[in-house]
Length: 296
Image 1: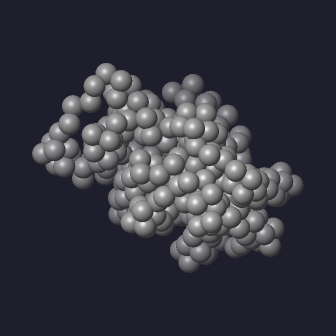
Image 2 (image 1 turned 45 degrees about the vertical axis):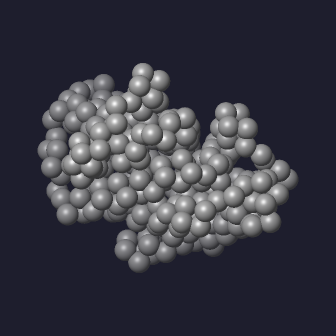
């Protein structure tokens, strides 16, 4: 018990670096999803991810001897629903697009976080943070420009883009919900409800349409569960210590990680326009990080 408390204290002291680690582990999760054959349904991947995460989280909750049901149960359930919808959409986008492009579309959510955080938790948007968000958004638009997509010989179906943006909206709402819950709930209770809701809601679909994964696929599925759990832990701790919109700007780093994995493992084409967009995204992250350093 003391060891867990000491580890949490160290995590809390990392501030913005929690979110850097979260971006890195989430990018490894996308790499695992991309490597799994399409014969395994999306909902089955999310189900397995949820099962592994739920086992790990419940184990930690028992060690800490805290109430696993939490205090604000309706909001915790809502967080689980939003997270489940977001993950299904994100997995679909990863499977049907180049990894670098799907990651970029996913990261349209920070500007939505700014709006939702202002509407639901009364966070103020500073001039520097707004500037960082605008720069990051311009970078995303540069990468998603139709001419740019044509130059790198990428053809993306419109419904795939729509589903990816739905995932972005759900992600933004989930972030804001996590931030609000962090004021009253233990980190691991917040994390628990995400896989719990996913596990319960997706079980009927998995049982009816079961597809048995082979040994190689099973390893990638375990990777999804492990890396998502690590990413979710660092993300939840990071959101607890930083404003949601500010944290989202730092998480732009996943675009960079996703692009690197796309080049290394899937031979995705990265041209000058993509590098320009990615550089603008990274610049927005640096501006946000510099602001945090000055304020601590």
